[in-house]
Length: 177
Ligand SMILES: C[S@@+](CC[C@H](N)C(=O)[O-])C[C@H]1O[C@@H](n2cnc3c(N)ncnc32)[C@H](O)[C@@H]1O
Image 1 (cartoon, rainbow, N blue to C red):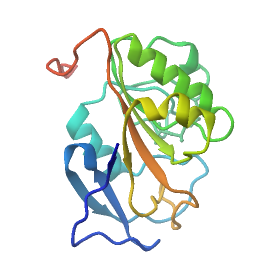
Image 2: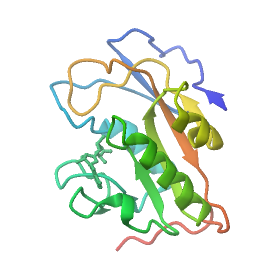
Image 3: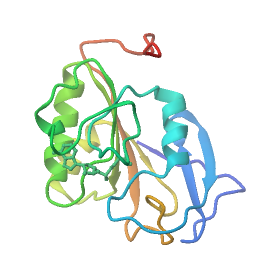
Image 4: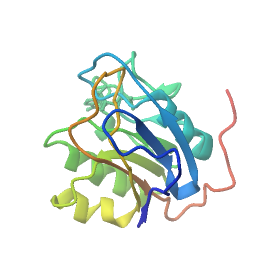
């Protein structure tokens, strides 16, 4: 496990949110405004992670908030689709279903997908212990402002990287289509 690196720019108040791709040492400082109920990933946060991982698939999204060209919506049901061999971004629907998404992410990583998960840092839950703790965890310092929300999230977040097993995606970035 890692924690976000300390930098002079780091502001731990709720007003300024520091985005840390700490597993890879990248840090960006971003601010967001207005409101959302979808907890959409702050674009700058995603961009920093995307620069590292070059995501091919957003596994849960809408037409409006999808972060990748290729994505699954509720109508597709990302939980029943194959993510095999893909570099996946996952900011799952929150609530009780999050355990199903983390299980799916873990299982797909076992089948060769890279899955980077942005989740609430709920370290007391079963899904955290069963699946998140098996990945490379970066605790995000400060609170994210999801979507174009004015307010910081009422919960801390973590980034969980579930690396592909039984496949090596590290040297095969996707081609631009
Ligand atoms: C927290 S939002 C993340 C949105 C976007 N992927 C992002 O990172 O900003 C979770 C999204 O999952 C979608 N969703 C809910 N159930 C789903 C399902 N079974 N399959 C695919 N997407 C689903 C919701 O509509 C919502 O847009």
